[in-house]
Amino acid sequence: MLIKLLSQFGLPFLIKMVRSGLEKIGGDTALKANLALGEVSSDIEKQKISNAAVSEANRHLEKMKELENELDNNTLSQIHQTIRQELNAEDKFVRFWRPAFGYSVALAWLLMIGTVCYVVLSGYQNAENIINALVETTSLWSVALGVLGIQVVKSSPEKQKNK
Picture 1 (cartoon, one colour):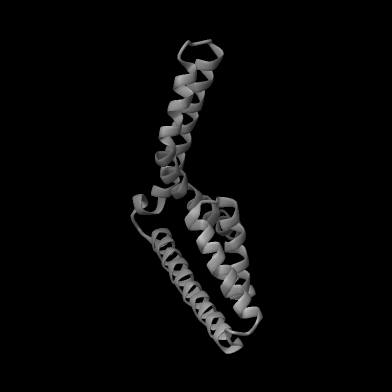
Picture 2 (cartoon, rainbow, N blue to C red):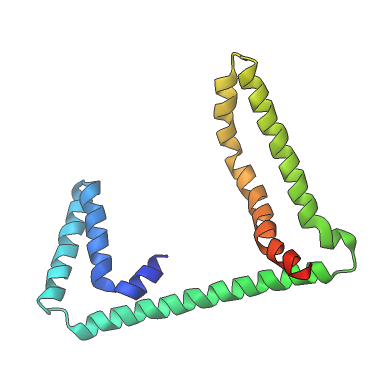
């Protein structure tokens, strides 16, 4: 995302944004960095740093954006190819493992939330500790829902087209 902003607005914009962030941080190191960026900004404005150098920096940012886009396109292409191979497979397990995984995640989530609701509504003494313990399951759920999210987002439009 940063590369997108930079490729649109360039190096002076980046300097301005970083300086505003450093002002809010405070501290000696942030102050020194803010002052150094202020000098770079004033040198750009006074043209002590040439427009050619700023243009070269912006060109570099644009090249980074192109490389990032290429990587994203390759990643999406591999995901698309994998899903297509799964859908065209003769083995039923290969075709249906994502939906089965999604249903099992949904069932596990329903059981967990149902248990939490029961604990809260029944006035259990350790309800607060149980709810706070749910934070520890964040990484577990993020992986599970990530797999489910890819399937739901990518598969639903395809299923509608096939109807």
